[in-house]
Image 1 (tube, rainbow, N blue to C red):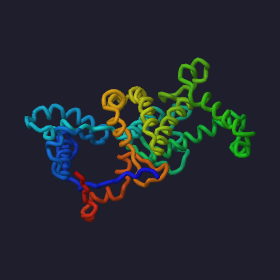
Image 2 (tube, rainbow, N blue to C red):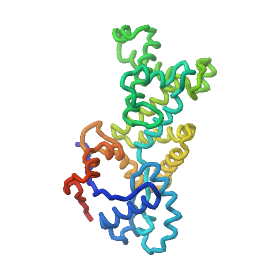
Image 3 (cartoon, one colour):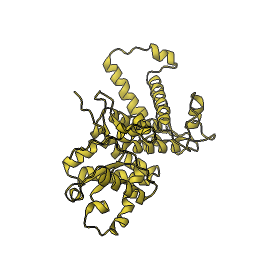
Image 4 (cartoon, rainbow, N blue to C red):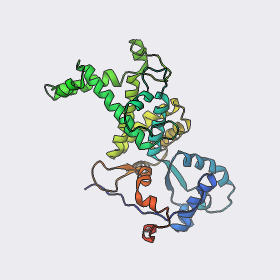
Length: 324
């Protein structure tokens, strides 16, 4: 049977988290007051907290504030607590990069703006406020359409009806079709496209080419597939792939955080610690196949987590099961 992750919900804490100091107070409250971990435990055990990029950045900034604390206990200046990255925010940042780079305008022959206007019920797709799941569905539809179009071109078919009626001889023929699509429409780099004269379309988008868009969207699909099936090694591979793409897209904070995370997992942290923390970014509360989610995604979606922020939540939802 598959491993089922146990969840224990903590009581909410009315403390602003818009500053470095606010984040530190929240950590101190939960570790020392709610969980009541003795201070001397922090002298010999390192604790890791999963957070988004902003939390990680504030953790860096908190170094100066910690230095002012003269306490003899490591717990008082949080030197035994480290923050690890949340995969949901990595995916969200990649989606933002795709949106900003491929959005385009009326000067482009084709752009995400045109595709958004063609598809129904896409009013929530915009660059001002990113709806995570709306963008996921939107980009998935575009990727599927690109693959369908690539199949039609590879098979010399002119209509969707012809593609639906097309029957390949055997599985080997299907594999050959997939190889052709990957080599021709998915993997060619920019310099190859330019050398062969394929990348000629002029426009105002930074990357106005269907092949480049297919490639980028396929990396997002690979990451989401790795998360869904619970494959930490594939997640790590995609983080390696995304780190320079974050930097190229102008998301320097995410690029630096991703590189630091990879350095910690591969070089810095002890092997057993790295394996636990890497696997801890994703978890499965249902014990079923293909139901693995990122921690931050589950917390955002879970109705109990949302209800605990209201005054109507029963005390049983606030119970903390702590085993020394």
